Image (cartoon, rainbow, N blue to C red):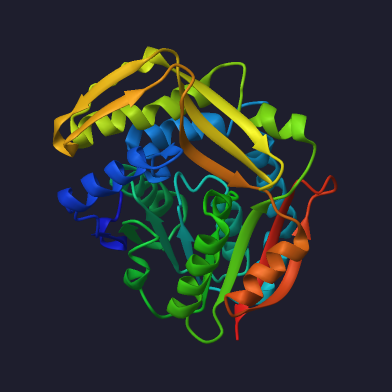
Length: 324
């Protein structure tokens, strides 16, 4: 029987409709047009991303998983952590490797999954309390770019930001975000950052253009979310999925390209959106890093790098750092 007393879920996503509308409107009026990546992740979007992580072309997920398996015991030994805070936790699939290592070291006390999807936070909390005897889960439903102050204090904390998600932020935004994490951490807390490394362009582009079309479905899901958020009537078939590498910015850029001229009335935004055939809407970036770039980013945010881990092919990196 599930012990619900070991689970606490705090919900901090109290949507300001006017702010949401203005954010989306500003994106659609910008040049190029763009949409906030966070709107991928309703419950369906989170489930689709889980499927993406299982695709043969999508090497980042399995590479990071194997790297965590090889390094988790060392991370736990170096940090002495009994509390794991995971930003953008999703299904916590890879994180279980860290749980196992903490359990072996008899240090597993508290897990704090932080995700914008309430459904997945609640599901993961129940799964993990059943899997790990005595584990307490304090879930945070919120936007980690806005609600970091709600992370519970106490314990020896390891804050993890995995999956290369830092790459979804532009350079200035990434530095500001890491600085905000640093400010919320306590003396002696550790930070584990997962980054995708620069590699062969063909391999990179194939990871975001899978043959099964799951990434395309995931990309178009942002339009489905917007239909519920702002009442826009998008024809999903009128868009195609585009993912390509930007050599100058060292990043994959993902777009929705209009297949034809479109005029889309969006009364809630006081906007009549016009798209020309071939016009693109930017939905996501995924920056790829080198080790020196990662360490410069961490030190710029205030952290002291402790350890660097990578796989034999140098496809993924894990940077362990500490609050000074």
